[in-house]
Length: 97
Length: 444
Image 1 (cartoon, chains in turn cyan, blue):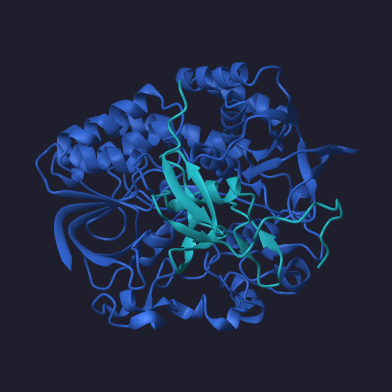
Image 2 (cartoon, each protein chain N blue to C red):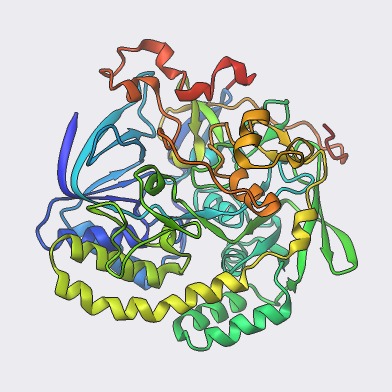
């Protein structure tokens, strides 16, 4: 089965990217190597449930904050901002509180 | 804005689709409200292989006259026989909210995964088993990635098979249940030919079986994202490097909306009669919220409710014995997925249990019940409203859920006040109950 054309152009944290139709915003954020939100004590978070329940995948879409990125499909021209920018190099140490 | 329907169905998984299609085919006006971008629920999610059964039902939905409201989440019931919903991608600062009136309501709200806290489980790339599958179907590239699948339940093999098919390298599939327990379940499955073949298919797709029983993750490692997982099986403990950990401990029913509407519950599930009627007049409940039983049972329950609600009682009664015959599977699945008590020791004192409010295990273990924990620690008070940590603390501490109050999902103040779109201005973005208020120290 040929891969569908990557025809949707959007920005994630200011960087342009193209994705295939049917791609969720959560997947686009992951493809941009970004996390989604920062927890109340400052730790990076990414999607957990993938189905709109856990609210870990919240991002800002077109200026509207707290959107569940797993429940929203990419559309042409969307501007997505996550608080967790491209992750720094992994130091191998487990994060401690 | 308020629209009226004879029958309103909430949830477009197999149960909801079957209910809506059957009711609509009798000529009744039917609307189907669903939180996801497309119909099919979690089990018939697009972006990958769909079984024949799914294609058939979704095609029936496509040609039906069902009014489809995809990407709407129900937040409240502002008055009797009315649900209020918000549109997920309601662009702009004013959102999009509407009321749906009904004569009969069919709740098919499905189930979610149970997550158990262990050190490192909050790291990015630690997801649910179904969670990873949903992300992959939503476009997450998985080819060449090293994946550990863990937890319990039939979902693990299905997820491992699917991501393997997409080119992922399955490092291990860890099922917490013992081999003896699985064998008993497998013996029971011999009486369910369709399901056994499905299981065999998963085994084949995954290649050499890397299934470990009585095995679970005890820690996830990494700084900004997952790098490795420590697995334990009996006295043996070892580390594996991986890119994703897909970990879910079977399913818990989404009963918040039925509970808010006052439906009687029994042992954590919505109680119904043989025709799927709840204790509330003109409210039916079908699928996983009445007992975790999988697609086939959900389809039967959806058809029974859809036909009964549309007045086709005789047709519905013909299906009731087939449903009855499948209820044994619900019990078998429940027993097979019973959690090993040792899993209660996974969380360390500093392990976060409530991910929304970063409440740690040490703060919770001195509390005596869910309500006290909420009041003293903010556990379960964040945007997920305890959907994740509630199921965890139920297992960890034996706490029961509180009563459910509206809104059942975070909602805009303008939606709750039923203000005209936008009239509350930008401040309406501060949602109910201070969930995203500045007090929560969070920015987005």
